[in-house]
Length: 104
Image (cartoon, helix red, strand yellow):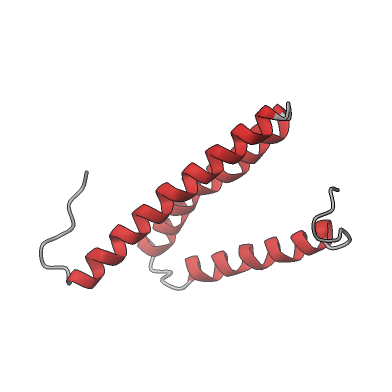
């Protein structure tokens, strides 16, 4: 496990630890949901759901790192905002017609 630089303020180290804990928690939730879908004999949706989460998790930091290294310090944040906005629009488009608690 990597140890943070000793000159970092304690608040930064705590924030880094919280980020790691959140990532681990999200991974556990994704795995639990995939197992739930598999238990319902929905193995194809479970696989698709896993792939749709794991690919951005793997490529996002790589692409952001290239942007930051190239001096585009704001670009990763704008790209993330654009992707998040697209997700919200598509979510409402696909699921907006369904009432809460109703199966599609």
